[in-house]
Image 1 (cartoon, one colour):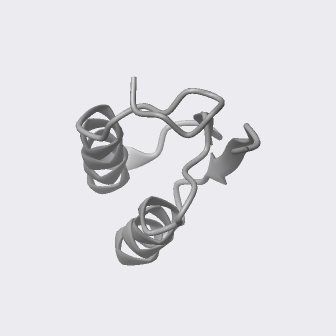
Image 2: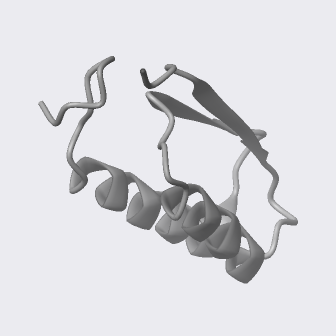
Length: 73
């Protein structure tokens, strides 16, 4: 049985876009993806980081969703 879990990440304006992308890539490479992932924007983050967040959001929406049994819904 697949356990549901959530992810949480704070994003600050001084973050490196490359390192943020690496962190998101790592999340997407997990065997079991989180049921939800919350990004907390700690103030304005600028265009480069915003683009990485938008990319991550689009990657998440393109992936199949799993129900509690691990079946694709």
